[in-house]
Every structure is written in C-alpha cells, then in structure tokens.
Image (cartoon, rainbow over all chains, first blue to last red; front, side, top):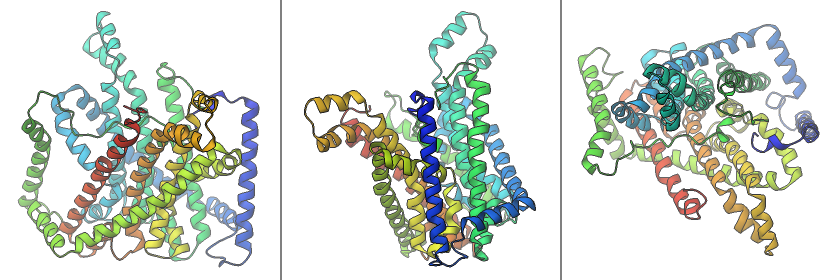
Length: 269
Length: 275
C-alpha cells in the first residue's frame, strides 16, 4: 500500500479511488442480494441496512461508545506499560553487553508464545476482568518494541557518534541528541507492530476473559443471542478504531518526531 | 497491515556469538538467564506465598509434561493443532500467492481485490471468530477457515508488492532475449518476487500461529493445545496449562528457526537474491 504510490500522479490516484469505490459498491450489492434472497437465515446473514441500523442505534444510545472506551483504555494502558518497560530495556540491551546477554535469550524464548495462550493462566492468577486484558496487551506489545529499540540503538551510524564526540558532546548530549533521535524510526516501527499485536490481543482477551465490557466481549456475547448484526457493527467499529490509530495517531507521532528531525523522508502516499 | 511493508524485524536470535568463544561459553551464556529465572520461580513456588495449585513448582510442571507425553495425550493435542495450522496456512499460502500475483499482473484483479483487502486487513483476525463460528459451526472447520482467512492478508499484500517490485529492466531484458510469458514468469518474476513472498509467508505463518491458539479456545474443538490449556483452567490444573504453554512456545520457536530459515537458505540466498 505504501510502495510505489509515490510516483503516481493525482489523476491516476483519483481514478484508482473511483475504481475502488465501484468495487466496494458492487461487493455490497452482491452481499445485499445474497442476504435478501432468503437462502440463508436472516439472523445469520443480516442485510447491510439492518447492520447500519444496528450500528446507528448502538452509537446513539452510547453502548458502543462505552465499550470502545473500555477497549481503548485497556490497549493504551497495556501499551503504555510496554513502552515504559521495553524502550529503556532495549536501550540498555544495546548499550551494555551483560544486559543483552541476559535478556536476549529470554526474549527469544518468550516471544514465540502467542499472547492469547497466556489468557487462561492469567485468568487463574489474576481473576476475570481488566487486569488480565491489560497484562495480555502488555505481553503482546513488549517484544516487538523491545527488539526494535534494541536494533535501532545498535544501528546508530557510528560516524554520527564520532562526529558528535569530536564536536565535544558529553555522554548525556550524545544520548539525547544523537542516539535517541537516530533510534526513533525503529522505535516507531516497533510501536506500530506492538499496536497491531496489542489490538489483536485485547479483542481475544476480552472474548476469553469475559469481563462485561469491551468490543471483544460485545462480539462474543452477541453470538449467544445470534445477533449477527451486532457482531458486524462491532467488527466495523474495531476495524475503524484500529485504522484510525494506525493512520492518525502514529502518522501524527511520525510527523512530530522523525519527519521533523529529517530522519526519514515522507515517501508514503 | 503496516507490518507487511515495514522493515523486517530484527532476527530474534540467540545472542550473537563472537567467533573466538568456545562453544561451552555460548551454551552457558544462553542458559544462564533461564537458570536465574527458574531459581526465582522455584523460590517463589516453594515459599508458599501463593497456593501451589495456582503456582506449581517446576518439578510439578515437568512431571505433568512427562505424564501427558507418556499417556499420549499431549502428542495427540500437538498433532491436531499442527494439522489445523498446516491446513489453514496451506490454504492461505495457495490462495494468497495466487491472488497476490493476479493483483500485480492484472489491472482488473487489482481493482477488485485491493479495496477488499485494505478493508479486511486492519480488523484483527480473532474478532471474526464468533462470526465464523456462527456461520460454519463450532469445531475444526471454522478454525481452519479462520486461520486461512487471517494469514492470507500478509501473504497477499507481500506477494503483490513483490511482483510489482520486480525490476522493470529485468523484465525488459528477458523479453529482449526472447523469453515467452511462461519463461518470464518462472525465471524472472517468481525469483525476483520470492524474497517478498517469503516474508509474506513468514508473517502469515506467525499470524496463523498467534490466532490458532486463541481460536481453539473459542471454537470448542475436542483436541488441540489451545483447548488443552483452556480446558485445564476448569480443573485448576495450572501445571498442565504451563506445560501446554511451554509446548506452544517450543513449536513457535521451531516454526521460525527450522522451517523458514531453511526455506530461505535453499531458495533466495542460494540464488543470490538476498545475503
């Protein structure tokens, strides 16, 4: 989605937008035809208008908003914890050999375990509810951030370090003015990957750990009552929030830091 | 699905070995953190701070592992989980590579699939699980289908990018040397796109693995590692759960190290596409 689009002209872009719109309309029409044909039960394959109605109703009475806020709160809490732990640890790992020797084997052993596998264990340890979801998010988000920070700090151009040293930068200035900005593109990439994993983990944890709030729980609960329209409405909301975070939040973060510092060029279309 | 286009993540390897080090130093260095962690675990477990049912000692976990292995229960769970993984991932690989190549080569396919993929990809796969269960029933079939669906996205996007990224000059020189469409595809486009395709497969497999365990818990399959740990919760069998988590970790590690690094060495590295 990002590669190669930089070269397309505006005209070409508007044409491809138009084509995409046509495709989506055709797909929606096909789905609507299938839904209205009566071949499948209504409750299982609701028509798009029914889904839209449900979505609207749930948005108006605030239920969807409340659940979304609960989910976002869990993700941000877990992601925040991961940032607080993983970024300093990643920097330490890159700067000190002993720290790297200790934590790298642990990280490579723990990383292949999917975060959702821990859900039943965490439920036993911490009970149902918020704690489990936050900790699962933390587990899912930590490793990409840790490994990216680690390789980012290691990948700092040694020429820059020598140049800064030659210009008389102290240890502290070196750290804050050279190492951190240089590692930042990697850290942001890590944060993006972390968010994607966290977003999956939170939905799964909410389904399994059945606290009575959160979008994952709404979907899971709707299954019991055969409310396919509610499920699709929340799916749409989950997709939208994830997309918004990815594009708006991380895009803004990138513009405020690495783009402004000139670390990466704005090549994204 | 930013993950697909950003830089490949740092290889999560064993700490890089400096060449002069004797092998036992390397083993010791990598084992040391686990010994420390294990010792801390043992101390906490034996101290009786937590009920032993919830926080079993390492001996208990190991004996649960041995017991389940000997009874053939654990191998059965592992086999079923791996079968689902292979079936789902195989489906995703075939469909994903086909769709990705079609998207890159045919304008119409790109117009049809790109919007659909762009909308489907950002939704976390596990969120579809209840819908799939509703449509296709509880059990293996839904699980495999969902795993295939979820892991197809990174494969499609990477294949598409890879085929598009094949250097125009290679294609033109092959054509100038008289290659027909089939030869062009086999000898230029496929090898040229393969590093991307392999990255896509790798991401897809990782994604399939992460989702599969969760879906097994939701889909009430009768065998499978996810179900093993989820079911053990009902009986407070924390030792069984932790043994299951350990097995899941080992399989995940083996998938990454044994399967993909081998494939990469045999293909793209040998062809000189990547070092």
